[in-house]
Image (cartoon, rainbow over all chains, first blue to last red):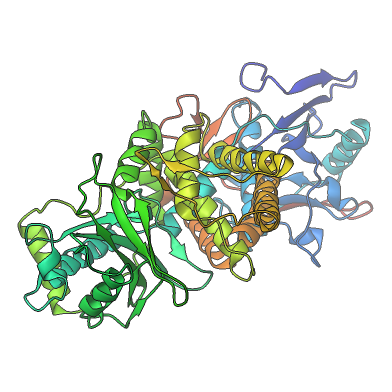
Amino acid sequence: MRRLWPNFHGRRHENGLVVWRGVLKPRAQAYAVNILWWPGKIDRPYVMIADPPIEPPPGGTYDQIPHLMFDSDNPIKSGLCLFDPDGREWSDADLISETTVKWASEWLHYYELWHLTGEWLGPSVGYESVAQMNAIEAESIRAAVADVH
Amino acid sequence: MATAPAPELDTSTLDEILLDLAVLIELSPHDREIAESRYRRLKEYVERPTSPLRPYLVDGESLIYAQGSVATSTTILSGDNDDRFDVDAIVEIDVPPHWPESEPLDQLFETLKNFPGAVEVVRCTRCVQIRFTFMHMDVTVMDRRQRLGGERPGHIFHSPDTGPAYRVNSNPWGFTGWFRTQVGIGERLFEQRLKAARDAAGVSRLIVLDEAERRILADAEQVPLPPMIPSRIDAQEAVALKLLKRYLNLRYTHSRLKRPPSIWLTKLTGDMGLIQGGLTLQLYALSKFISDSLREHLARRTVPREVNPSYPPDKINDRWPRAWPEAESDMTVLADHLDLLADAIEEMNCSSQSAILKKIDELFGERFGQEERRILKDRYDRRNTSGGNLLIKPGSGTIYTPAIAAAKQEVQPIPQHRFHPGRLPSNGEASGG
């Protein structure tokens, strides 16, 4: 991580939760990003955009933003859904620095283009396949999100 | 909550968008060919046996050449919604000593008034304007009878509707040569980027007038002729000037004030030279360079008076700004416009793409903003796999297409994947799959 993303700083919590904070600048706008990884508790890294926060289009709602791990209880803290869990595109053997961070920056680029054009132009799986997360894992994520503040 | 720090001075996104815009507002290679054919046709027409100017041509041949923006590769579309290019030509003749100063323009008008394919021909204060669909050609007559030393200096004629006509020192040939030596040195990388933008965004607008024009174009393909329009300059300085001119054209469209002359802006562009670091910084620096100079004049209550470096008697901005006190409003308004542009560039360079395009709409016109949205959509659409993977710069995470990143050694491919919709079960909801 330090070699590819020197502005990301990681911290391992006593409970095993690892949090990286850093800045990505996919185009002109810079975004502060948090990446959470909790081995044994969650099955994929959870990426949140901290600042500026993600926003729906004017007059829209958060659930319209494509490719989120949408959290209806706390939409602004929804994570990014960066790969197809059924497509074997990521496993915990893959480096977060080589996959998750790159995909998060790409997600931000397409998020901006979505605001610009109204269309998600990135490579994606359709809405017929919504990834659900089990309640225990969701609870771990919410605990982790609460922990990073 | 963490706060995003001030961005590093990476202007690649804005460089990319500004380069697309510049390509959208310029003469395409096809447009240049048609413009070139009209210069040839002008030459044929001025030399025809019944031409009133024929007896006064130098050695029986008209010396006709491009001047102004088309010679400096800075021609842009005029107006907000008008797909029209304005180009300029010089016709050199030996003006008889007994002609009054209004006569050369009168004779030029008589010569050109039935120009084939023209929608209208109009006698203006210093030129005769031939209006074609999508193109105006301003033809200026120059007296070179005195054979002044230098690179083709001479006199043009100022002949208003009211008041006396008079001669004006002029040397457009020399000015073109000077500008072309000032810019575009060592910019191979910029040329490559400009070519990629042209391939993606270029638009041809001019249409062939008639069979005669088609014949001239075909002949030019068969037998290469010496060009009448100097070759294109793919220089960052020239591209920044095109954008600046487009921005100012829109600012002055509904203004009661006269816009600054293009040749004066061109002179200052040549004086400032290349700014390393890309098109965004070049345009920013050019805006500040001119505005700072105007603010100094305002403070000293003077006016800028630039001369043609190739022929100092040629006062290139003799009609702008006006003398004091009117000079104050001429210069203040322009300096304010330029400062607003510089501020907008700073703001855009740390904005989202949708915010940038909203600003582009304001600065350069909504039609080009819409075109740019289409270009970005086409460029980054990866909904099928044919577009090729995007690239990313480690450290910043900046995203590039392979074509744009060609010269950036430090980028890496983004591993293949597909974004996916998902949701967390809400508190109290039964567990999902």
